[in-house]
Length: 315
Image (cartoon, rainbow, N blue to C red; front, side, top):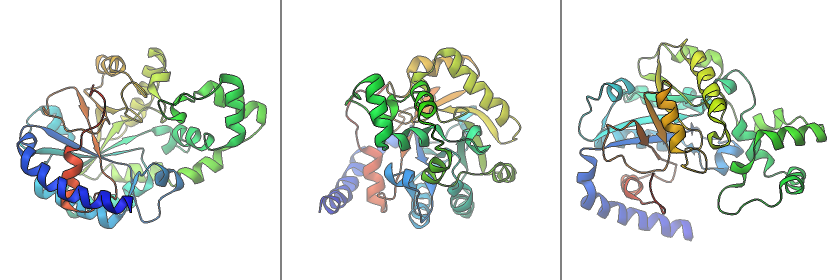
C-alpha cells in the first residue's frame, strides 16, 4: 500500500514540478547515475536498490534523450556545454553495464562514463561488498562491538567499518570471506570485457579509487596513493578521462570537500559526488549526480526524481 501511494503521488507531483521548475534545467547539467542493469540483481544490488531492469533502463534512456542534450565527457571537459545538458554515468564496473546497458546505449547512440575500481576488475574482493556483507554477519558484529563499542546511529553501519577492524577480525577468526562476498556482490566485469569496450566510441572510463574504499577513512597520502594506482592502470585505455567519482558519494560520511579539492590539485579535472541533485551550473569542478532506479518507470516519475529535494544542506 505504501509503495502504491508513493507511486501515485510521484506521478502527480512529478508532472506539476516539471511544469513549475522546467527552466532550471535549461542552464544546468543533470548527471544520471547507475550501477547495474539486469533482470536478476545480486543480493548486494537488491539491498541497496542499485539495479535497473533492461526494459526500464531502455525507457529511461529514451526519455533522457527526448528531454535532454546528452553530452560525453570530452564535451564536459572543454566546457562547450549546450542547454539542457545531461550525462549518463555508471559506477563500480559491474558486468551488467557491459552485457545489458551498453547494447541499449548503443541503440540510442548515447555515450556513457563508467567509473572503475581496477582492483575488482582484476579479481580482488570489492571492499564495499566486504563491509556490507560483514555488517549482516552476527559473529563480526559481536567482534566489532567488543572492540569498538556500539555503532553510531546517525549514518550507515558499513561506513563505520575500516580496514583495521576487518583485518583484525579475519585474522582472529581464520575466515576467508572472498567467495562469499563475490557471490553477494554479483558478477563484476573482467579485464577482457573492459579492454573490448575500450574501442567503443560511446564508452569512457573514469577513476573510482583502486578499490571501492571509504575516502573519509583515508589519510591524504593513502587517498592519493589509491587514486594514482588506479589512474596508472586506467591510463592504458584510450577511453580514460581524468574525471573522478567518490565511492559511496555522500559528503562528510564518505568523503570531504577538502579531499575533493586535494584530488583536483593532484590531477583530477572534475570530481563527482552523489548527493542526488541537479547542478544549476555545469562549469564547476565538483559536480553532483542523480541516481535512477527501477522505481522511475514512467516519465512523470523521472520528473519527480529530478526535482526531489534532500534533507540537509547541500555541499
